[in-house]
Length: 191
Image (tube, rainbow, N blue to C red; front, side):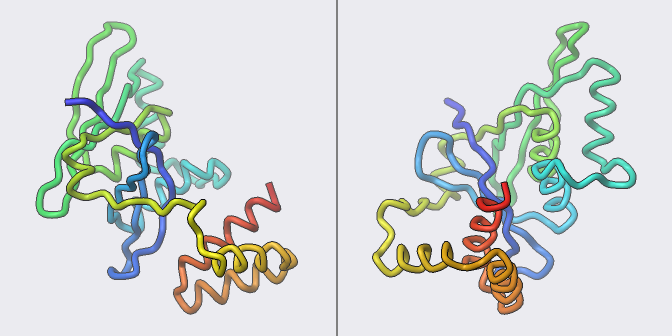
């Protein structure tokens, strides 16, 4: 079976489950998105690695794993999300001892595998069978309605302070879709 590469698109708070987040993985070639429900701790571990700005006082478990790998010449070549059973994704990460060239497959929770993949800068893959069962189709931004385009234009006219206030309000009322659009505008302006 051919592997399909995925990229991390976003992490969002789950609308349906308390203290849960949704990790969104997009096909690198294609228009499907794989949503994976993860816990708060796992979401934080992934977000910290993605952001690469927040320094924790002590190493997180995944950082410790990276240090261990570096110390003993072990690298991670890839992560594969290979199974979906009763809504739970199963993953494997493929380790290689650089000195001996020995390769080993290790079973892992998908959230842990992805947190480790980020730290080792290795690709994430899955199979067509997983995507066909669990992926959703990503909206094509070129097909936004006139009303949606006007909303985006309105946001671009806000001051940075107004955007930050709007972001807080959107989060408060749990309008995460609006919050993500505002957050993206803030990031665009401040980067």
